[in-house]
Image 1 (spheres, rainbow, N blue to C red):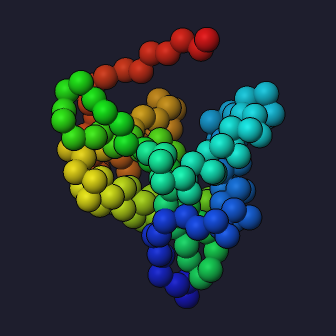
Image 2 (cartoon, rainbow, N blue to C red; image 1 turned 90 degrees about the vertical axis):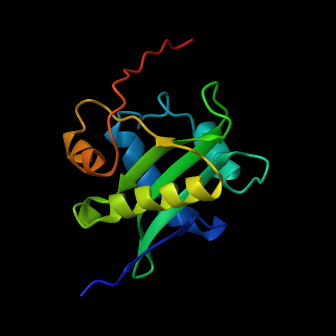
Length: 153
């Protein structure tokens, strides 16, 4: 029998277990090679989680002393609300943890953090081919109808 899943803020000692999840997440989105995601980006991302001046936060899912999932979110201003918006930027669970409610628990924990921060909304994006994740997202949120455009500079 597997133990309960604990959702908690990431701790500095979690790096050895967080990093493989982060690498797998980036590989999933095709950012695994060094040119796609420079090591400096990972180092800066990790450091931001522990800098109280940064609006970037991380939660992890832990079961039986092992990290099985992560989520990263940040708060930012908006021209359409006074309260800060919460952007759930990254969400990933290990292959063995999928379908067991870990992703939902991580999303719900971000909802709690956003409410505590006075944020009127949480939003995120996913790739149009990520149908497994979208099956969950359709249960815990609603589609905004907006499409994302970007230009790499």
